[in-house]
Image (cartoon, rainbow, N blue to C red; front, side):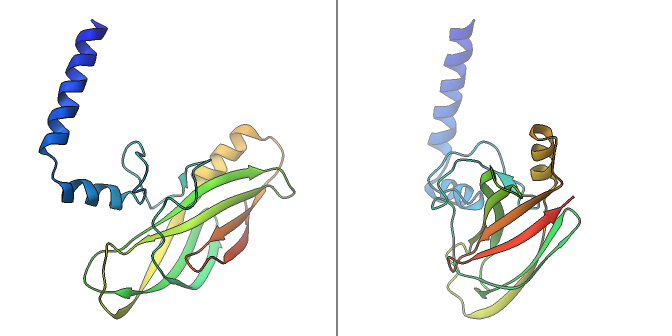
Length: 167
């Protein structure tokens, strides 16, 4: 029975891969911001993506500037500025190294930006609201003490922004 299921899965995979065009595959990979990894499932960039242990050089980091950043409860609000205007841009906050033993406990994140090869010159801004509760829930699941995390957010310029996330 296992052999039959495995054979069917392989056949379906081969069929899917043969029908998928190169552009469809690139668009799918670009949309999840990990062009070099096979990340399972679709990602919701409206909340922090927990990807502990990934190489932070994998996600797409097209240029942008941070105009403002603030925490409001479990929501991280970020105003970004970038050039473009011809294609849709994606931003995702990725926790790539978290729960570093320190006081307060630290989390390394990066704000990934995928411009989808948009070379237009308009100056655009985006208001991002990113839910941090998945990070908080994972932390409280493993640690009994503590009510805050130090968020170290790597941005496209290579700089870090640090914020204290209290809950």
